[in-house]
Length: 71
Image 1: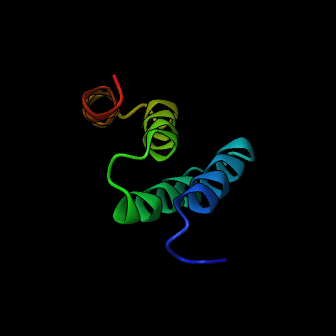
Image 2: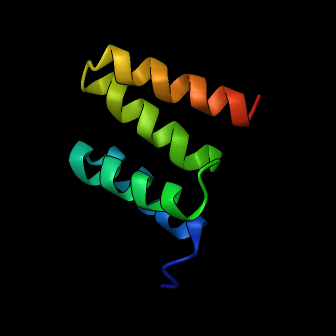
């Protein structure tokens, strides 16, 4: 897989989230965001992970970032 292909990285993050591998999902989402910092898909996965981990402060931060770039 092309390491710069954001869609593939975001898809991997979604799959990891679905199997409840939150650490892996967050890491994959972060890698996608390194390539495209405004990726709606990656930001959504990262926000979901933070919500499920009950990290309210980080959840709100990521959610605000997502809404700023993708209203």
